[in-house]
Structure formats: C-alpha cells, structure tokens
Image (tube, rainbow, N blue to C red; front, top):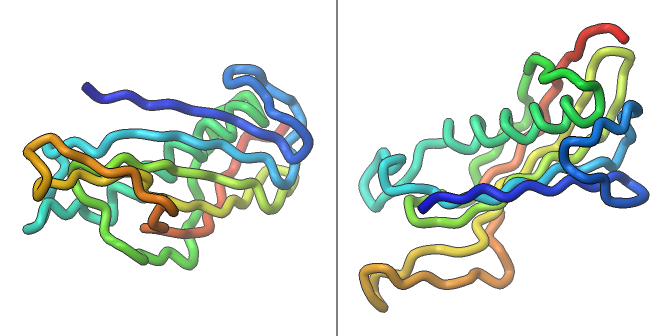
Amino acid sequence: MSRMNSSVESADQPTSAGTASGTPKVGQRVLHRRYVPYSHAHYAGNLVDGAYSLAAFGDVATEMCIITDGDEGLFASYSDVQFRAPVRAGDCIEIEATLVRVGSRSREMEFEVRVVARGNPERGESAADVLDPPVVATTARGVVVVPPR
C-alpha cells in the first residue's frame, strides 16, 4: 500500500493543509512523505532515476502555491540540482519545500529529498530500517510563477 502524508508550516506557526494563507511568507514549508514503489525502479540495484525527485519537488511546489496563492503555479526553472545519495525502490522519503524568496509573481524555493527508511532485504524480504539520521538524497532550488493577484 502506498500512502502520502503532507504537512505545512509557516515561519511562525503551522498552517493546516487546504487553508490558503493568502500571504506567502519566507520560511513557509511544505513536507510530503511517500513510499517509493518497486515499479519505479529504473536501474540495477533498484535505483530510481533522478527525475523521480524532480517530480516530487513539483508536487510540494504545487501545494505551496495552492496554499500561498490559491493557484497551482507553473515551474519556471530549477537551479543547483544535486543528487547526493541514491533513492531506491522500497525507500520511504520525505520531500520538503521551503519558501526562500517572494516576488510579485515568483516564488523561489529550496527543495530536499531525504530517505527516512530503507528496505533491508538482508534481514528478510519485507524488512526495512528507519534511518536515523535520514540520508539527504537530492537538493535543488527552483522558481515557480503564479498569476497576478
């Protein structure tokens, strides 16, 4: 079974998902968690391609725009994308977006994918371990644009 969780926090206090704050604030964060299914393995060793992380960044950016601007927004660019550790099928990952700059129509965010749990087939077919601390797998910065207010 696949399950996704999401949470949103402003720089000052948590904001419930689905409630548009109306004012984007630097420091606002969105966090998703999800299981990486084996159907997404693309390479030997159950490796998942880097595009998986980029798609996850798009998901958290979309939620951020909905919360801050009441619109899904459109991705304009990525910069400084770094693949720091592998993401594998069977991982549980958390994807975080943090709002770092607010323009009149642009929203710049920092993104991070962290592996918080990983399958451990040496202990058993369905065994998995919580990673403490989590492993930072992918980082990036990105800019989205939203319609004029």
